[in-house]
Image (cartoon, rainbow, N blue to C red; front, side):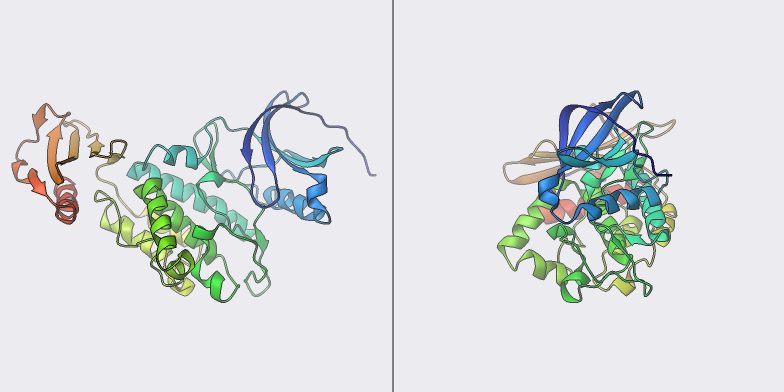
Length: 351
């Protein structure tokens, strides 16, 4: 028997604008649920004949129920809009964290594995997400990463491919999508590779690479040729084993990438982190790294720029004490290439 129910919520404030369907996300109060929710709204006039497509997004979220996928409470239509009601996560998105700089190595691995676990479920129920980026990774109240926003996702055919692609965010388009307009789940693998690249290097460098590419050969050309992002450009504390995993996820040829989200997650799980370096890039004239050590003095590495030259210094417990037995790691008057090379040696020696 068909039933028609009445639902209500009170919008408190706007907390985000969506992409592609003129959507706006609000923080709202739901008296039926007795708490705050997030509501994604799209004005009815903007949908025209695509109302069913909007509800398809809600259906995909519902089908992908998993601890690492944002759940949907309900979807419905008001007099002016269609809406999807979801939990409100006060911690916000991964993009908020990246605005402050790169994340630590252990957080990088944890977030990557949690995102991939959510995507593995999405793939199991027959979809490819196609819009994996920092703003679409939310953190719940337990700080667990959850994949959000299924507006760009598409169903996989019986042949395991998606041939009707949505309009994707330019820097995150997999190389094969430009040439063949056909992708598989390895498109999501590629986008998670980009996600990890941004987490460990910071978004400032990501933005610089985009601007440089657009001013030169062009972003599309650089993506197709595997030049964007620069696979050789990592912050010096990033261990080689993590670099290799990210590079594999970013291979131009999708057959050379990890062939599933689970395979990718397993590769991340095999990476052991000896020192959980936290990198600060807030001061343009200085880069610094901090690593806590159990039952030992903590380590600090500082790179400062003075009069066009670069100094590298290593301390324990801050700049009051030089690291014992590490005097040879101090260098002064370096140029940028030599400083980066020396810093890589520093982090390998300190591991």
